Image 1: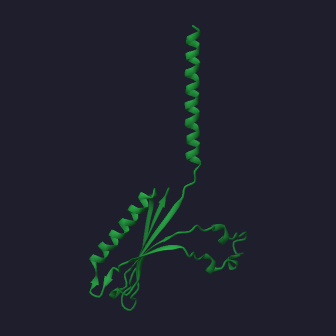
Image 2 (image 1 turned 90 degrees about the vertical axis):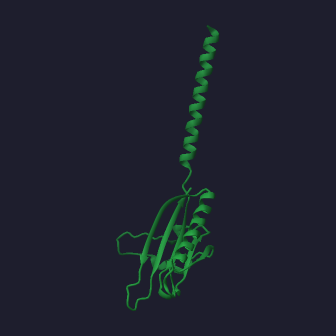
Image 3 (image 1 turned 90 degrees about the horizontal axis):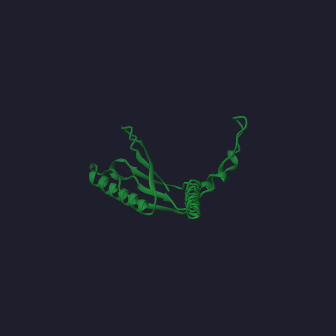
Amino acid sequence: MGQRIIETLKNHTMKKFILTSLLGLSIFFTAQAQEYAVVTTVESIVPMGIGRSRMISNKEDVNLERFTTQRETGTDTNQGQVSRKDLKINNLEETKMLNFFSATGINFRNIASNDAMIASKLTEMTEAGWELAFVTSGVESDAGGTDGKGLFITRFIFKR
């Protein structure tokens, strides 16, 4: 009978240990902050291929608090105290990409080449432990006639 009590206590203690460990691990993983990274592609849709296309990613952290002000009445602002030149970072990665248009019009080979470079970056980020969380894109397209301007921008937002 005494042996049975000892076994019951051991089992009870082991169950408490396992539950406590699982709870501790759960709290540890929940408490870790998410980290985000953004990769942006800007692809020119300027006729004759004279635009600039790039893939950009920042390589330094920014303290958002330094550039944020508070409004209390809706019209009072201290944004004049924030200098635009202080907002710019110096440490970034810039990858040259091809323009959507060449001298003869839309260039599908250029698009396929850009797709391959974007896929390479996505693979690189995934291998580094990042998970693609969101993709958002927009276009400022040529309005025709004398506009001659346009770009296609895509933001890839990763988290880990």
